[in-house]
Length: 237
Length: 136
Image (cartoon, rainbow over all chains, first blue to last red; front, side):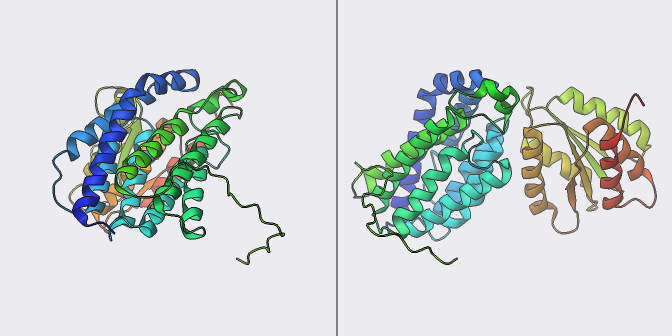
């Protein structure tokens, strides 16, 4: 595990990369949100992450978990609507999983805690045309790649990005069942979900940042390379 | 006395509902509005709601019932309750009523004014408003 200082530096780089990316995609997110929402996702997210970048710019000591918590708390106060509690609230609670620093293991725990909190707060299941549709495949693929396939975290993250992309595409042809888009009922079909899209952008920037710090193969997709020859035995749970 | 918080996407709506409810709840009622995004716009804000919850609990650790309008108001109120519970400690209990915001606030204010009111009785009174009919 890298020392605390390097981890803090990596988190700060990630914040800057996410803030820049959301800023660059502001119009695009707003366009997506004007089709099926209230056209404020781009502005809200960009205001939020800009505030996070400003707030954390001078963080040159302290624990990584506290820094990540600050990201959550800042998003809660700066991002309006449902995105504040969904992104900010979930980062805030999941940050506790990083109290021992960032390792392959704690990063899986963080990702799972984040997904759980988003689902609990938003009461959205997969297939409701929300950020959960991008987040669930990303988190599941990341966890499986690390815990079962023993892949390096960077490679696992690259697979998670591919999984999130597939999830974003999945939101296009389905009907919204949560959030403001659900009021449009069948008219929401054919539009890409803005929350799933911004979630993908964030995961992509985490990967871009991780590439600067970790070794591993990033030219991968979420599919498992090996198709088992025999029927797998069902696991007991 | 149980404190009340009224959460709405509009600051004006929250204040107006508080005014109506306060008239029913008597002079001692502690009813705090938490409307708008905290920045003058339409929306809801968890930190803003949290402040209102802390004000409604007062310095003496009263319980608080929160009334909410729609959509993100519910999520921000839930988050605000979690945040407020950290600062208020175990003394105050905070509960969101599953009720229409205006009718629920009126019922809650009337119940909270009673000498025997409890957190449960206020929530129950607010939630009774779910079944109100207006034209029959």
